Length: 224
Image (cartoon, rainbow, N blue to C red; front, side, top):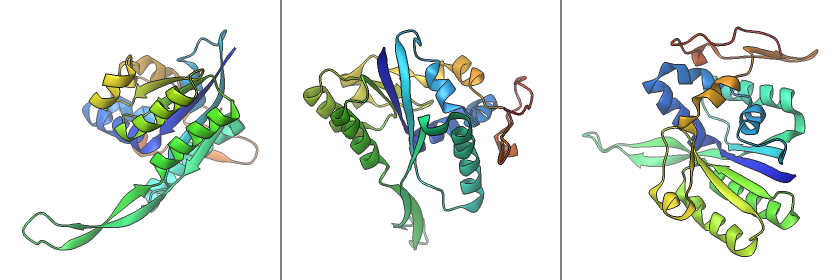
């Protein structure tokens, strides 16, 4: 059995979904995703074992966004236990000068540490020999040095790249084809939506109402 780990660039993935949902509102439903089930759908489970899904993100500074993200990630932890791991970075304010007439400086939150955390985890997992296949879900070309380092120093570890919806990188394509385009796999998203209510005897998490699309009939709300 080949051991597999998926590494999600959460910021890249979420914003790709967000852009896709602005084009087709059905994709808004796919924010509420069971990440283990979704990743399993890309594997031949008779030949591959999903060891872990590592989701790299940062808690938003906006309370409503933070609440929605927390519900998603905690619901996944409730369903999938230790197989689903969240690695948090931080947001830091960055001073940006207005390009319009006012020319004022203003503060804009910027996600930090995600790129380094992804790179560190992928390389450490190679050192520990805990995966035969590493799948990076990102279109961030900053990860090319990481992929190069793994292919050079750990040739037995196979690396793959999946592009989030509405995301691409010519630099990655030139070096790491073929690429899986997640935007072409709507059926896998559809089959991996969590029930609207995820709960156990202690905790309950509910799909945010703003994440409900309106173009197709989706599975009815249920308790996991």
